[in-house]
Length: 357
Image 1 (tube, rainbow, N blue to C red):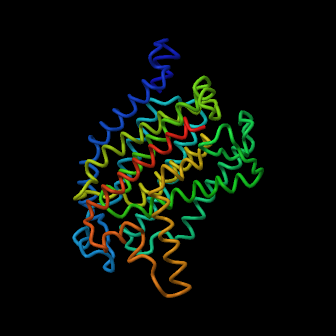
Image 2 (cartoon, helix red, strand yellow):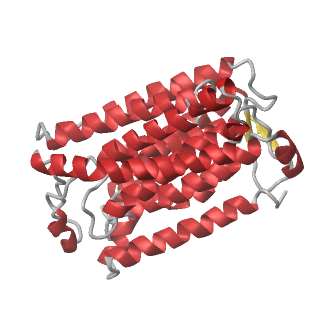
Image 3 (cartoon, one colour):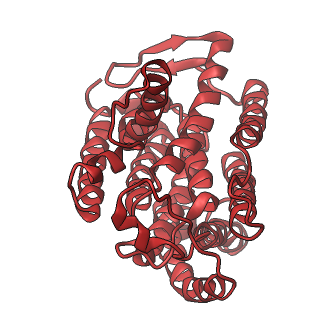
């Protein structure tokens, strides 16, 4: 909105620069979060929207029972408002990301609403969540397939750390898109089990993908770094920086001991947004690197379920992975901070791919 007003109408050149607007998006989303969070937390407490804690997990978690949840509402509001203010609303990537925020947010909100307000312990069934996530992934697949400005690598998978290397997958590439978006949404959801754990790693991934988005959207830099140039991709960095600001503000209240949890409203939504952003900039494999914490959490659940069904034995003390370490004797804060450190290391490794080509 501000771009169209100040640059297009008033011809103020400062607003054409993505870096300036990305900075504005960070500050705006951060300020909005601090403004609305206390109000939303008070009202969620008023209506007793509190977390239910499993009694078969770490006993230290029993004290969290009743902690206010559905805090993803805070992130979504600040993210959307900041994006509308600072991003170019004539950019198709931004429009899709706004739509995705609302779509995935509604899936998570419905799940939380059924569990916390309607007192349905199962909430929205796993099958229904997968169906809705799959519908969105299918819409993206159809859009990208028919996108006239799509690059020459439209159905190719970019291999990081190698110089201009792509694997042509043809229609199989759209299967990759499906698993990246749906898998990312659910992986972040599984990670959201300790105070600040998911939020901190979401911030790390968002910043890393923002760096890639900016560079890939710049024809000169992308050519120099031997990464695919995608018209308009730089604008995604404004959205991701708005997400960074929203996440940073939310972490103020979500850090140990958490005043509020993001709930499925936040985790399902933000995971889907990270996956979608990676698809738009054709960095699906880089998402596996920088989002390695989320990948490990999801894999731990799948391994645990598969092995237990086959052998009736458990590989981990408890899944997802963060609970395994807790039951192994590590304090919650220690697990969270170490997972953040791992996330930062993975982010450095991912960014290093820009030169190792």
